[in-house]
Length: 90
Image (cartoon, rainbow, N blue to C red; front, top):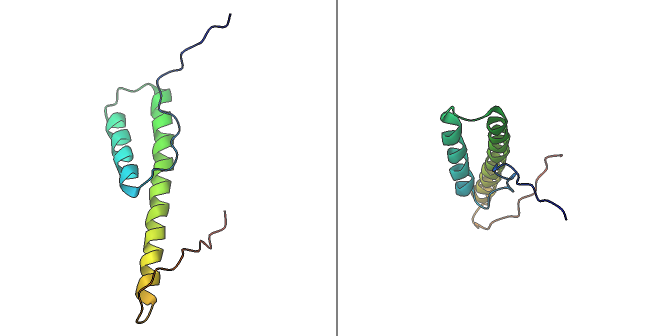
């Protein structure tokens, strides 16, 4: 028989949020939890890492939205969305 061990109740590493707003909401939740000052070091580090990932995802979403707006405003006469082409190298 094998025993199952309970993992600590830490949030799993999130996938990028489905929307910018959801990402901001999750970031606000992380900040509130960290501001309590009552967290063990490992929990604080895990939340910080999660927050940095969410921050990066939100920043990328903002950059993509800005690029789309620029494409739309540059089109003379016709306003049609263009597919976003990411020229950033990974």
